[in-house]
Image (cartoon, rainbow, N blue to C red; front, side):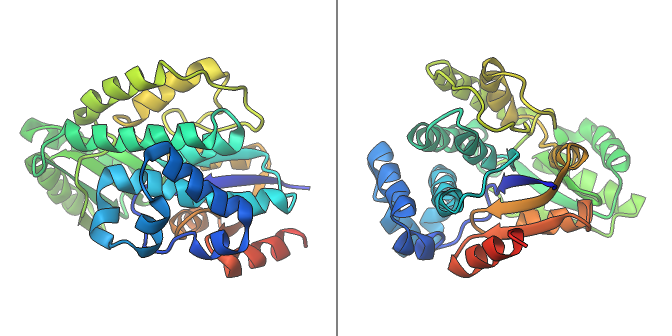
Amino acid sequence: MGKIAFIFPGQGAQYIGMGREIASEFRSASDIFDQAGEALGIDMRKMIFEGDEDTLRITENTQPAIVTASVACLMPILEAGVKPDFTAGLSLGEYSAHVASGTMDFKTAVSLVRKRGKYMQEAVPLGVGTMAAIIGLSREDVLDCCREASQYGTVEPANFNCPGQISIAGEVKAVEKAMELCREKGAKRAIPLAVSAPFHCGMLAPARDKLYAELESIEFNGFSTPLVANVTGEIVGSPSEIRDLLAKQVCSPVMWEDSVRLMLEMGADTFIEIGPGKVLSGFMKKIDSNARSFNVEDLTSMEKTLEEIKK
């Protein structure tokens, strides 16, 4: 019997109405939206279900909104008796994974990510930094291009998503130069990303420091399920490591492909993406097309997933 991994999406997956169907059908999911409102003093249900895209796109709103929708979608899966053998989340999604792994409760996680979003947005003035997706180039080639372009300013790999899809982040001029070099090396595409800050690079160090100060006041529980960290692509050994890993995560590259490969090596053959969108399921197909991949974001996808994993 293979093992199951629960994986959770990151920023960019949000949309108005995410989680609404499941919250309307399951009391446990509905309660998560209420808990988010209590923790943040904001009507999260109204923002997510009836709000506008521009408000939802503000980083300090986006991050708690996605974690709220993801954990709401998680509740009926747990109630159906499906238990993960591993958890992991892409960037922001790592907080949802921590809730699933039992290291922190939902209210703690949603409060943290609102502050995380605020600190990340404040770290770099608008217009100073940017990000780009590099398609069809090896990890080594992207690293070489970033090194060469760094004479124009900060530019670093930010997300190792799957084979042939890597994002870079840094100062605008340096990122533009790195994109040019990547095209010259044979990248199929080098696409500017519509983001408000250069996430997961050294320019976010001020956010790391502020977030660490917040994390110092939190006592983490033991893991009920092994969790794979973005920063290392390895299982987190003990709760004492969580604080450093979550703080470093905001200014370090996300080792997503490495994280998934580790879970595959450890016997995972079924990956359930829980929360808005299907981005991680798309990455899974490129990392290992033989692994079973499902998503849970509404009633239809939830029912299909539960039906398939019981086969």
